[in-house]
Length: 116
Image (cartoon, rainbow, N blue to C red; front, top):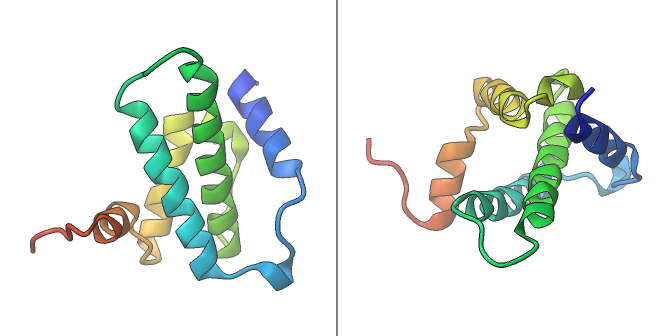
């Protein structure tokens, strides 16, 4: 088991929101916020201490992604996140099959919807 998978499993074990606090819209907004930070972090390291921050950005995005997927009944195995981009892409694809297309949502939030 990779260190990233261990960190992700630990993060998923931490108490999050209760069922009463769950809102798919709020979870999606949180996910998009984390994705935005992840995209900024992957555009290039800046300053000292960028590596721990980049890992934290990946973890928060992946936790939010897994929680949203699980809420929609999509099975998630943290072992698939070794390496992280593989598990992430798999869940994003699974969400796309039920109509939650991350790329399109990010573009809408950023104000530049895809041309058709």
